[in-house]
Image 1 (cartoon, rainbow, N blue to C red):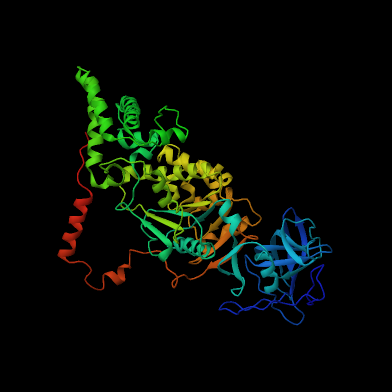
Image 2 (cartoon, one colour):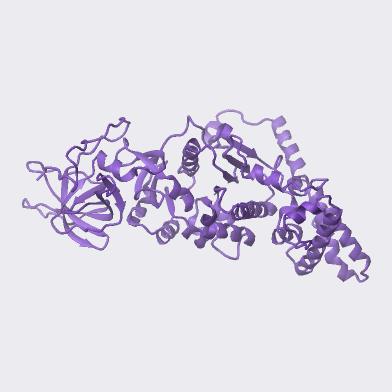
Length: 569
């Protein structure tokens, strides 16, 4: 009864097990019979645990372990999702009945190409009552979780056997969007870094843009990263579409509609003036410009021409009430142009058509040995942060479209719920639209999203539903857990019930980016570069003096220099 059952189709000359490099962790689990099937319903099976002869201790079975059920035509594999004893023994020598519930996920069959065993998702040959249930051994785990002839990256190890590497399928992971979720402190940033480091290690010509809102990643990728912050960021205002530009330049009060109308006329007039004075008119015409000017076209213009247009209109008006929107708009533009915090967008004294240079640096074309751009947004003023994110996201999509899919890119969004909140009445609508468009259409043009959030319940559900791979780390709130269940379609949803119990760097991975659902532990990346944690911990910081008067004065000086008071107009 304890003899292992060979998988159907196994070849006599097939080695018993491939060579493995032993690692720290649990010992390899032999392929022993542990139970037999007593019920099959849909994608789930129920089996009764068996006791070994002369041994009162049945095999220890844990949630998330991989098991296999040999059938005449294939070996069905699944994950243990529950363990129970519905009829515990009442004494008198009776034995209790112990059940395991199994989520069926795939099967091992003969590969028609070479006759060897291979794993595939989906189950064509369901097990039936009485079929033996075996614990998967290391060979089984490797066959299931390591797809042959497919590009993969190793990000850690399996929870079931630490000697078996956890691998992600690169093309399915990147081409179909993925999301990393988990509460603060569970290791989301380290998990994301581990994934991206492995991707970059194997792909020197990648194009990755990371929106870093907390300045965590400047040291995570070493010399492979192009580091951008507001001091060296160049994102001129004329790259903004009109919706983004109006959000930055107009107020949201009763004069909003009037200011929008004035700004639209002023921008068109300014673009015409620049076009008329430009020495590049022939170049523009060769690029397909028939001479028409639109308010959304990414063509250069001068703020001074916008102000001149407003002054001209003010000279034609007499009534004070009618001039108020003009004066407010003018004051706002002058304030932004003189505020150092906005110098990366409004501070340039000269206007040149540098769109190619800007796109090349942001999206690493060519990457010059730096395939990832880390954009530090931590010091960008909050009132314009959404505009900056919207512009970068929109430019990424437009570049992907105009390159006709010839420039595969990955856009990484930290704190994604801030950019595209679930509540349609919150957040900046252009940012939500840009990310939603990438989520729904980006894969057609080689543009993918990597989202990171601690509150998936606050993320736009349309964007969340487009993520084909979910890396779920510890989640403690029921609302977040429920959202992940409702937006994840896989054969192991019961595993999400254990999200509150996961340890640091542990995750349950579901979706198309892995061979099948699995519980993993991410590798320790301390020696490869980790996200920066600006908080050293209270116990360490408070054990010695941490800031003197001179240091405080220096902070105040930088504070005032970077954040001078602005007129509200």
